[in-house]
Image (cartoon, rainbow, N blue to C red; front, side, top):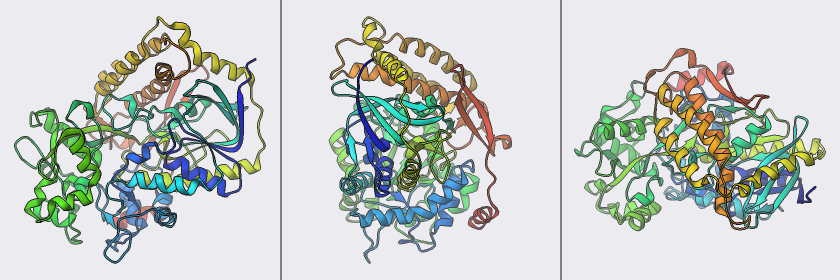
Length: 603
């Protein structure tokens, strides 16, 4: 029986992005021992790539904003299949979390009278996004890390968790390995918080970095937790299109919030022709009014480029498919046009969008103060994830909590820009708080050595198949299949083809082999990632097939309209006793009258 190095904590947090750090800080503040495991280096979390801002109804730029408007915007953006309690808590608590970040040292952009500045963003009725230029996520991670290092949190960098350990129904630990040396590790804990982020690497074109392979979702699913709303994958409208080496890298919505416009190869601003009926009264129908809105005119309606991400992404795809795209298969995003409106436009763009200016200058040799950018949709965010209790963030597995992108419920069918950054601190705090409470009320459980030995043998199996399938090839083929068959526009026949292909990918993954040894072996890491990628890909496809309608980020070409029978249900996925993936439709919890009244008032 192998003797692996063992660590012991009251609360183990898996993932060190914004949600994980905030959970670890809160749990540590409650006086419990906290371990923080991250797949990459501390500070390398995907949160740093969030650019536009953090959504919170501070009302600093427009005093008409409040939590009720934010709640109504979030519910409408999510097509009302959101978990209403999560959306309510988020809207109410986000302002306090932003002010907390400021108190901890976050340096936000300021209004002329010294308050936190807020900018316009898609789907938000008023300027709501507190920001630090277009580097907001980076500032949040810096602030949380600087605050967190004083809390006595034990950090395990470059470790990947392979399995959650249970005693009966309760989670009691985790089994993983150190990526650098390949050594297996055991983490005993009274409570675990999953904060592993998203799953964008299941698709070929994505803004997500290499870590985003759906680890937390797969770990929770295998342990017996439920997944919810997996069909809703957000394709951000604007990722870089050229050169090929940067395809998919995010172009922040802040460009459009500062006045950037979308045009086709005919020079036409096509979004004016695609305004949905339910947004028509709030959306400008001319360029002048849209520009005034971006400049802070409270009486102006927002430009159509700031409609919800799912809608803008589909409009861009339509232009490309109908032959009005750019030479490299996108559309144009133009912020340079504002030189017609202001004499110091170049300095203004560099000050407001410094990362975007340098990103295009250094990676594509394009000066965005002079030229339009070529952009197109990129897989960006998963609205679906682990089903959790709205107040405590605990899954149906006792002691297992989740927060951030790997958890689900707040966003419904589509996430509004900026809500992800407030989501991670609002629910990261709650997850840490209730995980600490659970840890205080429970003792350490017993670890089953047999389950550890099984997980270890499965992990090293690829070394016994050195002549087997190349794991990189399996991953490449999987990502291409998901992009082509379960992408922005979906049909039943294509998704059934995807399911058949996934069966083949599972067989190939089980034959995947690696050469060399366990130290410094990225091929081995890739082989181990295949299981998580295949699990989330199958869940996405099954859920998308089950929802026979178009709603939010799910667009079915064979069912292009909303269907009332799906208006009040969520798709739920769980693992059956025989190991198969099961799906069912669950009715949404009934919204209380006071929140129904809020939505009616905001209309």
